[in-house]
Image (cartoon, rainbow, N blue to C red; front, side, top):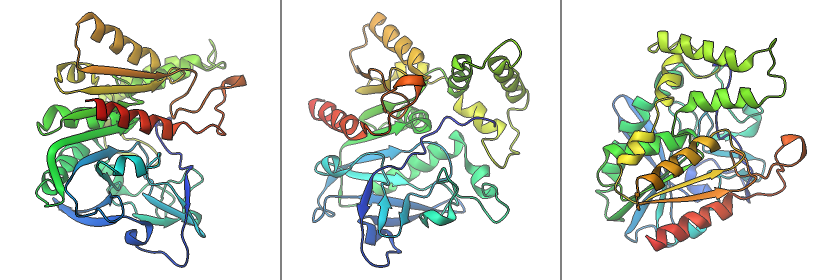
Length: 332
């Protein structure tokens, strides 16, 4: 796939001292869950001293790309979550799962410039590519949640599933299939499917002309995807099967939900028109279980757009977004 709609920024830092090689050294509990033939790395972030206190799960589905969950550079550690999890950990145990067959912990020096992990051939690991599918992530996540809900430190009073970008599609699908989900946070997603965000991005490109025809080329790419929807070849991007699955419109699935749903998005994101459509449709149908929060003038990862349609990376809004999530949860 020539383009990736993804969440690959890791901008928050914390300080650690000495050689740190385990998740515990970074403030996480680390579980290894056996799913089919795979060993799945699961990280749990709890408020210090309250690791065994019964609290509900806040399950976060991260975005795309094979990126380790813990990345360090000397004594600096890049944030595992795109937001500071401290406020949410007052009320929840936060859970996040590593991408399949990607190292849990990595020195930034062994990663590509976008923090992705590649094998000795310079390609994404085949084991990752084979599993980078909506049809893999959803049942895997559900199996892990069911296991965690059997633990004494997990309260079953509520179960929050949140996802951003690619993770929003995973979260929406999980909420339709797992009845114990009580709240869904759908962030930075496209309810009409990934391919439309790809096309929208090309249409907005100033160099999309009669000669370059980027948008039309994307339409041709989508035609190939549909014709070869089970094709699993690929080494530097999503397979046709992955693109096909993540381009499944979540609109119908979302509108069937009766649990509280919060939709958050930047108004300069490529998916913004489709979230606006979802919002209009929800209002038309008088569904009162949905809430919407748009961040005016911000892009996919909530950075403000400035001149030349470039993000201003000096203004970090993710903590504000997470605090808005928490306020909504406390109200619901």
